[in-house]
Each structure stands twice: as C-alpha cells, then as structure tokens.
Image 1 (cartoon, rainbow over the protein chains, first blue to last red):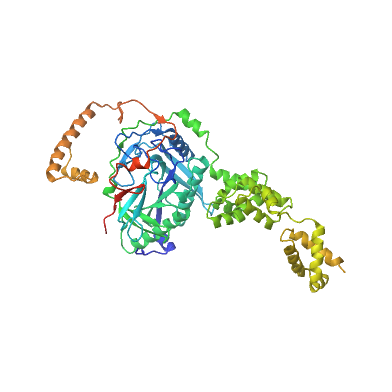
Image 2: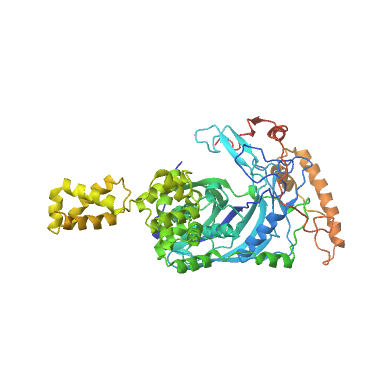
Amino acid sequence: MKKAELMDYDKALELFEPVLGFEVHVELNTKTKMFCGCANEFGQGANTNTCPTCLGLPGGLPQVNAKAIESSIRLGLALGCEIAEYSRFARKNYFYPDTAKNFQTSQYDEPIAFNGQLTIELESGRLVTVDIERAHMEDDAGKLTHVGGATGRIQGADYSLVDYNRGGVPLVEIVTQMIEGGEADAPEIGRTYVAAIREIVKGLGVSNARMEEGNVRCDANVSLRPRGSNILGTRTETKNVNSLRSVERAVRYEIQRQAALLAAGGTITQETRHWHEDTGITSAGRPKSDADDYRYFPEPDLVPVAPSREWVEELRATLPEPPAARRKRLQADWGFANLEFQDVVNSDLLDAVEATIAAGSAAQAARKWWTGEVARLANVAGVAADSLVHPVQVAALIELVVAGTLTDRLARQVLEGVIAGEGTPLEVVELRGLVVVSDDGALIAAIDEALAAQPDVLAKIRDGKVQAAGAVIGAVMKAMRGQADAARVRELVLERAGTAQ
Amino acid sequence: MSEITAEQVAHLANLARIDLSPEEINRLTTELGQIVDSVAKVAEVATPDVPATSHPMPLTNVFRPDTVVPSLTVEQALSGAPDHDGDKFRVPAILDEE
C-alpha cells in the first residue's frame, strides 16, 4: 500500500485546528439477540445461532429484547443523556452480505437517549467535556471472511464467507458532537474518551467491554480547519479502530496526513478509511456518496418504545458510582502515588486490586503482586491478568508472605502452582513443600558449614567487610534450596562470623 | 402534481439493485408519481393534532424477555442459500477488481 505523505505533527498543529467526532459501538452482553431469542454468543461454530428473524427470511418478525432496552437506558443515563419519552426503530437500507435482512434495524430521528455529556481527564490533568449527541439502539452485522487474493483483505478476494452468529446482536451506538479545542491533545482525547466509555459500560455491566473481541468499537472522525478560518474542513471517518492505543495513533495519523495533503494544495475526500493496525496507517475505503442514501423509514414491524418516567428513575437508581469518581476515591483510600495508580488503571486491574484489598491485603502488596508477577505471567500466557487467578487467592498468598511462611521468591512459585490449578496457596505450599525454613538450628548448621568452607570470606567479615557475607548467604540459600528468609540468614551469618572461632 | 423524476427512479433502482430499462423507468415515474399524489391526499386531512404514525395499532413497549430459544440448525440455516462452504454462507467477491 502506498504510504501517504505526513506532515510533522507540531507543524500540522501550527497550520490547522483538528476537529474530532467519535462513534462508539458497544455490544451489549444480553443473553439473546436484539430482536430474536437466538443466543448472543460466539465461538461454538459458525451459523449456530440464527433463526428466520435474524437471517431476514420471509415471515421472520422482530421482537424487542426487554433487557437490551433496559441496558440502553442505563447506558444513556450514565452518559448524562435525556431518555426519550417516545422512541422508534427505523430501517437503514443497504445491500451488503454481512446484513442478511438488506437493512439494519437502527434508530434515526427518535433515538432512545440524547443530549449527554462526559467529562474526561487527560494525563496532564486537563479536563475535557465531550458532548454526546445521541445514543441509539441497533443490531449488529454478521462476520465476513474474505477468501483468496494476496492479502486476505476484501480487495482482490475471490469470494467471501459469512457467519451470521453476530448478526442481530444488540448494539448501542454513542455519537459525540463535534469536539473542538482539543488542539495537540486531540489524539489523547480520542483514546481517553473511548477508555471512559469502556469503563462506564463495564461498570454498568451492560457489555463485556473487551475491545480485542470487538465488544467496543470506535469510528474516528477527523477534519482540519485552517488557522484563522471558521469554515470546517472535510472530514474522514476511520472505521473500526479497535484498541485504545490505535484510536490515539489513528487520530494523530489522520491529522498529519490531512495536513500534508492540504498544505500541498490538495483536497480531502469525504470518505471512510480503514485503519491498519500492523502498519499504523489508514487507507481509503468507499467514498461517502450514494452509498449513504440509506432511505431510513420507521420499522413497520415494531411498535414505539415509550419508557415511563417511573421506570427511567428506577433504572437511574441502579447506576453505579461513576468510574471517574470511583477512581478518585480508590486512589485516596489506597494512598497510591499517581504513577502507581495509573499503572493499575492502565493494566485494567482496578477491580482485581480492589477485591484483593477487600479480602484483607495491604493496598501496596495487592498492587505489587497484580501489576508485577501476575501481570507478567498473564503476559506470557497471553491472557488478561484478572482472568488468571482469583483475587481471594492473591490475598491468601500475600497473607502467607506477611506471616513469614513464604519469601517473595517462594511465593512466586506458589502463585504458579495456584495458576496451574494445584489448589489454594496453602495447599500448594503443602503439596510442593515450600515453607520457609525458619528453624534457626538448621540454618546455623548450614551457615557454620559454609563459613568453614570459605575461611577467606570469614576473615573479611571479621575485618568489617560486611558485604563479603553475600557469598556465604548465597551458599546457605542454595543449601536450603531457596526456602529460607535471606534477611534472617544474613543476620545469622554476621552473628556466627562474630562468634565462630 | 408530484415531483417524481426519471432521474430519481433510476437512482432508486440503482440503490435497490434493480435493473430497469428506459421504458420501465418512464412507466414507473408516472406510476410512482400517482402513488405519491394519492398519499399526499392523506396530508390534506391530517391536522397538526394527528401525529405521524408508523403502525396501525396504538401500542408501545411490546417486549420479550431475554430468554434463549432454540435456533435453526446450521443445515437449516444454510438450506436456502445459493451457495455455502462448510458451515458458512458463501457470497461472490464484494468489490470489483480494481
């Protein structure tokens, strides 16, 4: 693919003001699809969860999932939106093989939620309030696999295969107003905004919120306005940017690409663009013209959704503490420095650390184990850290370290045992015989032996060269197969060296 | 008199993936115009206190519980498809060669 010319980022910001807009699609974790009772789950073979309704077969009739409406209203409320008193579904007509019905059931001019606001905090501490235009309900499309051609991409494919398991799964699409004044922070605003949405839907429990599995997907709109002009530039819409880091990179890339084009006297084509994770660039998709002629009309097979004000207030009462407020509270409670806390948040371990502390661990110990050894092992295994081990087990492990039963080194072995399914930390300790040797008699015997074997070291220690003791400590730890507390061994080595004749 | 033009009909036909001859476009332009005119008569009796409606029944909030019901088997799902490959529907190349 031809690489586009890019302008230096600072130079681009000197010449142009970036204007942003985001559409975030959230897949709801209801048990069934939006308009039929097929299971909302993937992974047990293609086309196992389909029916006449989600396949768009003759006679299929949609029926609205009550839970999806409830989740959409709660999400709307959490975004500070007003909830419509009267809301309708509409057909968005287009032909594409991932849409079996030849239309998407969406909402047009009567979305369930509108006029919201979300304030996000950037790393600098800058607060940015993003206005939410609307959050509307719709159903998801099926999954396409392109076969043939050199790249496995749609371009040059010989044919495509379709799995409709995802077709009809409930989505909420959250659309922002134009975001101006972001300036050099624009890419970070994109990342932080999507992270905030993800945190909110996770906190509400309305979505599994795993971006890598497509539960949260972002389309990023970027345009540039020349400095001193009040006319908006032409925007591009980069589709399906599916990680937080990619949102940031894609916005930055579009700013640099558009700036280079405009400065060279070119024009921006209003189009959708595809983000390429591997190369970090965007490429042109279809131009937005006739294809956008969706001929929306009210869905004749569904009646309006008119949530009573009582129901809306009932749902409002179920909202959890807003994620930003929760973070502030937890950081203060735990007494973490900003970097320590950020590390926990960025590793997506807030819930795990909170649960570990609730199970009795000290805050710092909980943080250290989760962001340290557990995260390392999770990284090796290629899974999320909080899916590797239960917070209660981590708390039990920490308790054993605090009690002096285990050294950090032994505790790491126990952790591996727990993850390998050998049982609770205590059971692993017993199974593997990993208790710290706290019997001074056994340690002293080993120390005396090591000192006798290294008379030169003994002489140095007696001369006050305490650091020479390291060689003896090492030998003792080796003899104890690591099952000794190194600090205690050191104490005893110095004591024995002083008294040994 | 309606404002349906031959260009609009051709555009709609293109969006709906229907291949129309010029004669068909002319005929449909006249017929669609008549339909639009007939529908416009409704607007004459619709006063501001009659809200636009998309459904004949004065119903709202018809929901079903979020409970899984059995789906079709893969064989049933694929049985009406022109082509399939294993357990997936197979469709022709989506983009033309460029």
